[in-house]
Image 1 (cartoon, rainbow, N blue to C red):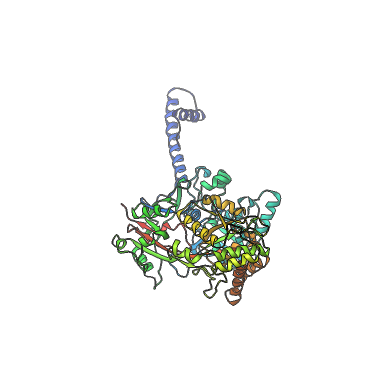
Image 2: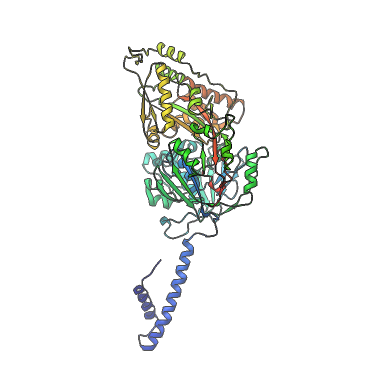
Length: 628
């Protein structure tokens, strides 16, 4: 803060006037004393203001000269954690916002631990009330919304975040997760729909603060998976004054949190630059690796005892083309890469060992089966392929039977995937290795099914609808080379069964918006980073239409099974429910399941401690990097 000399003189004359006579020498002496008094007062006052508004310079040990360079293969959509739902936007928000809980970095199986909470919550005897204590001394990054004051994270900020999910204006993708879990959540949302405005000042019965640092969440009934929700960036504490300052759209580009990083620069779909949050408190790298995991043992030996975080700057480039991504890593323009399938042979031997050319350069490899599922959804509201009549179900099932998933894995994924038999990945809790899908690749059966339900071929060998109109199956796809390859496989597959294929190209963020409006006939998507089967199976739950249910599937039987799934303990009955849900998906032709990925991640020698946790995003605080 600066102050002008003329204004200073006015202040001094005002002080002199208050203190006495207006004559000669005494006036000059009083002026000098007053000047010293005012200057001292200003120095002290301004110094106090600087201390109040500035971050603690000793809090974060990150070195601004340690720059990590990485790349995303798909553009981000924004950085409001309540509203975004794609992997790469969430990766950024996870580095900016701080949830109450997180996961231990090395524990296998995964283990939930405190983050912004002092400790794990106190849970009532009936398992319905969770009481959290928020750590004292956690501060938001400086922002104009705080008017020059340091802003501490409080329990009220976590209450506000959860209430934002209930506000229908935000169209939160997590509504279905909270709706029937938190007491009064659904009711407050419905009330806002009726009135046209959400009341953020209400005393919510299920989400409230007892004091500045104590938060209570009241559940409708005991819930086995509730705490996993609070590990996500969408549950990170948000400051109400920031959201109100920047507004609905502005919040997407002005994320202000208490996490380890700050958004310094954002060029949409091109570049994201983060710098270390000076307010983020440091910690000591102190994690215990599983005894049977050599990579984790090596990392622990390398990193144990370091003051973290160390990386002071993260530069993220959006590189959609696999060739460009691979060249960027090969040329050391980025420090780590998930090897694109089309370049796997340039990284691995036929036995999936790292090629000696990379070993000689000190490159490290981290391979893992991913917690993901790839699938092609079919929109139940689409006029061509949608609907629940027998002929529409037959059409979708024929299309699914006609697509060669094995060829996709072999040719496009280069064998770096496992064919999906069910919606839940092999590494996610709830997966049943004994379940086998009834869907088989069979152009012969697909053709017979289409013939049976009146999809007759014309003179050119392409089929018409039962009413005689031309049948055109439309899929959406991005402009990436891997999607172009997949488009060709779809064309080949559909030609085998006599179906005309139309491919529409668009940008990923735009397709997400259209998909939530049930406006895309069919599109290949992936679902990843779910901690348990419940959060995968919600993809076809009718209450998630407009959120995650891009197939816009509505089935009362499926919904009833989903309600059971959320409440049943592990055991044969819960497994039976999952099997029934898979069968409903299969017989209705809702999703064409593809595969679960096997990721090969490479990192250059200068990047230390590199691995991937199945559930943690924005994990750069656990790495270190050698200076150039």
